[in-house]
Amino acid sequence: MISWLKKIPAKPGIYTLIIDKSIPEKIQVGKLGLFFFPKGFYSYTGSAFGKSQFNLQDRIKYHLKLKRRLHWHVDYLLSSKEAKIKQIILAETKSFPECSISKNIEKLKIVKISSKGFGSSDCKSLCQAHLHFFKEYDYKRVTQEITKIYFKNGLKPMLIQQ
Figure 1 (tube, rainbow, N blue to C red):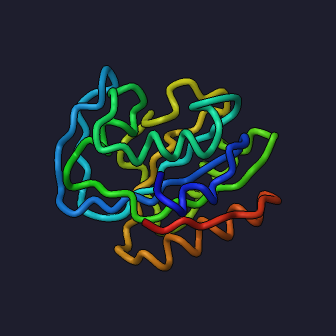
Figure 2 (cartoon, helix red, strand yellow):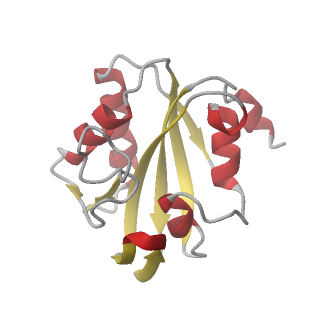
Figure 3 (tube, rainbow, N blue to C red):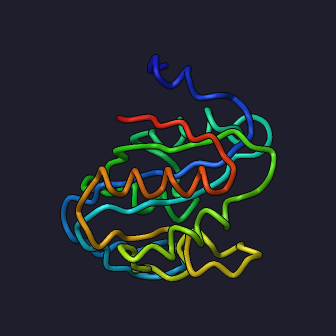
């Protein structure tokens, strides 16, 4: 196991993957459809509640696998050789702030929804998506904005850089 991965708690919580998509590409996302992903940074917000693959450590480990079963929408994006997880922001929590985090990211002026329904097909809060495209190719700003949103939601974010 990668040593920094041991620092991720094997507890319930929420996470946001910051994904660097190095070239534009069309990707078939399961039954959701064919989507065009421009070059740039994306954030994908998910949650991990329960045991095994449902805790933060195991869920992050799953997302970092080079080969994975295509199950969640984000698996299709991450299966592209041109998509790399650059940063992970996570927080332990027993509440379910996934949609609140996602909706607050969506409100940022530098964000665009490029793939409606992506990661939110089972969403009870009617989120447009849990994947967000950042119009500015500025990694530090993306990280800062999402970290602020975690704090705003009463969470204590932990940042893991690849």
